[in-house]
Length: 230
Image: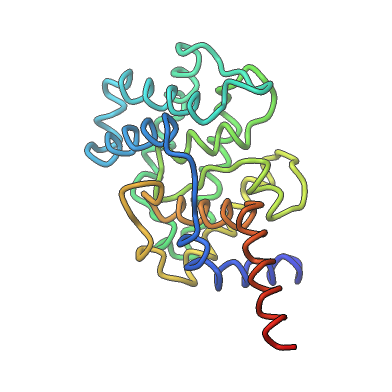
């Protein structure tokens, strides 16, 4: 990891309480379907959900649509293909289902990265190109305590300064989220809205950090403090 990126992560960790306090995101169908999906995931073991998977995977499918994964040039596969692509990886998902990013020991992280990488390679739910965004979101819905949902505008730009999707960047972000979760108790920010898991808290902090509204507020605060010193 570069010195610049380490500094950026250090600053993020220090600002997370403020970023979550100021987190302001839409609360329409995207939140409704997300809470429904997470509620079902929390109430049943993954092995049960995969026994009769249609309702669970249909909720994931609907949540992805609500999260704009079938718009603006992105196109999801028809549900039958979508379902098959996920279930082809069900044993890998089960293997990871008990892990939590905040309690995952460093010694086990290599194995987790390997299995996550295998899922990344073997799951393709989009007609359009690119896997990092779509795969990370599906993985988050199935492994909400382990994998963050990732996007180009916020996540990739924050860590890399670009929007390049790749398996390498996916695994790097997984590593960065593990480091962040080890350094601060994020459970204090959990709620029944958008902060439903530790990985989502980290994601929301980054969304807030990258928000023009937050940056405008930060610049205004800096300007006000400067005026008070002169």
